[in-house]
Length: 485
Image (cartoon, rainbow, N blue to C red; front, side, top):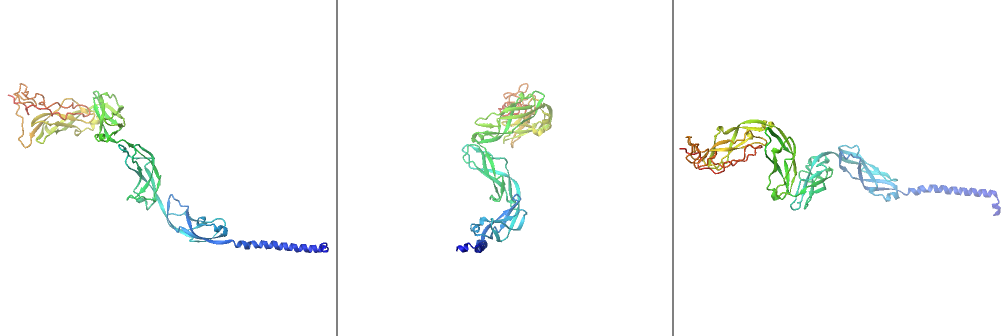
């Protein structure tokens, strides 16, 4: 053995054989892995992979239908990757970026995990129907449900920031929208409902909700005033006094024409207007703005507004004569017929004073001359006339004016006055023998035959004549004057 080891040629041959052996081992290992890896690659079929639409301009279009909505795909890859794969692992895309309104067939694309390859996809395209959208603005109707606490009343809901909302729907469905509504509950509340956010819903004409409607904004902030009972009534102003001679009021305009009264409902039901304010015209000095505090009526808790502003315009007065102003008769009974005996034609001329702009628009029909015959017996009567004029217009003279009215019993012979024989009774006097000046013997010798006190002076500014019952007092015995000797 030692002899072989000491022989150099033997050692060389041994080294050569060992090198060949090592080369063979290395090359055999390089060829083995490919055969082993090839046995780890498989294919797998995945069902019900969802199609995901992308790229649609949702501000302008609506994807109305997609068919099919899922596909079957076959993929290849390593066993370890395929074993954990589910339908959600894969993404099938439907590109709608360039799609317009109508029906379209579009090819599908896939987005697979790393290491997997698509072998087949069934189907490879999808059919879509795209519809154009329309946006329209609607008013929002807010309604309340429930009843506030006892003694309280809910006002009109207030919408913030606006009561307008945009509704977006396919063009074919937009005509179905009849209203956009919201409901707010006020059951049992005793204070204003503030900053309450309510959901909006679009409804058709039959009152059914339209779920496809997209509302912008989808909710609104609502406030509901809840207060004690109140009533809104017209504001009426009472005027007293007169301006200095030569001046007239051209306009007297309040900044509000109605006021709100708060209090028990039983008290509010008694009020149809608010007239607790009185303005003394004599204290007005010049044109401008004046503030008047509104007194709270009895049994009323509060009035809003509490102060009213008036814009006053004072100008130089002018005079105008109204011709042929008709006289009306009031107070007739069913048993008597009233006829105007004087003035002839039942009309009078009347001079009035006021602001030029008011007089220019004034017509005879704007003035009322009323002869009140209530309580008078049959016969001829000289009746003082009540003169009703528009605000800020008054008569040029302050004397009373009269009309002669003949009262006759219905279906009877007319009662006529006897001829004037010199010793006439009072203008409507009694039945006495008559004195030298014709005064009624035992009847009243007042100019109107004791017809009672006349009403207020009908020359007051603003047409505040209140003499409508001027003839309701007691009469003397005579009906048409005395029977002078």
